[in-house]
Length: 219
Image (cartoon, rainbow, N blue to C red; front, side, top):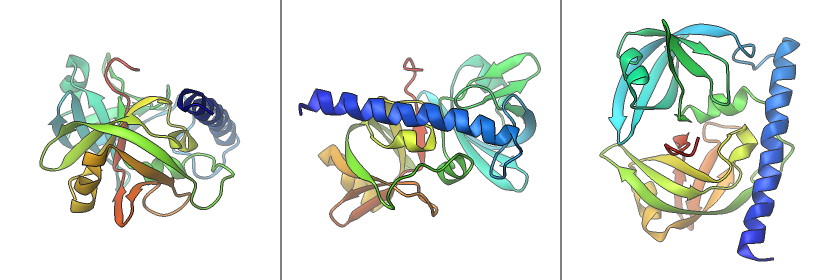
């Protein structure tokens, strides 16, 4: 099978799971199942705990009922205007990643952190304990705290991630993660339970993904 055909097959399979997961999530929530963050279309107030600009994205942590949720947004006027520390915004469960609203303004997220929470709020796929695939990437952005790799990362649809092709993954600037970047290829592994849903592996190097972003212009 050619590389192109293999990638197309991977995308079709993962895309099908992502659609099924989204539909199942809505159905489960409508029946009052546990593990749902909110009903589709509902909203709840979230408090902005921190905001850091990283390239063309805002890295935002929210305080939500005693826990922290992390999102990445564009740096457009709507998002900048509402997302400042101690601001209270409404998170509305609409669209693939939800949206933030304040008054008449709406901020559409570009990506998510808190990957374990995102996974645990959605139906679990019927997969083996540690499914894995090859990921290909290049360094897109880095600062003292994070690196963003852009490329093709299979298996992301298993948590209903909508970006089936070109995706940015966010890594912490830890030695194991830094050592993985130059090669441009690694194994991505999905974990159905535990604190790290996705891990990049290369021999003895192990790096847990901290976030996923749809590149600006690809959404």
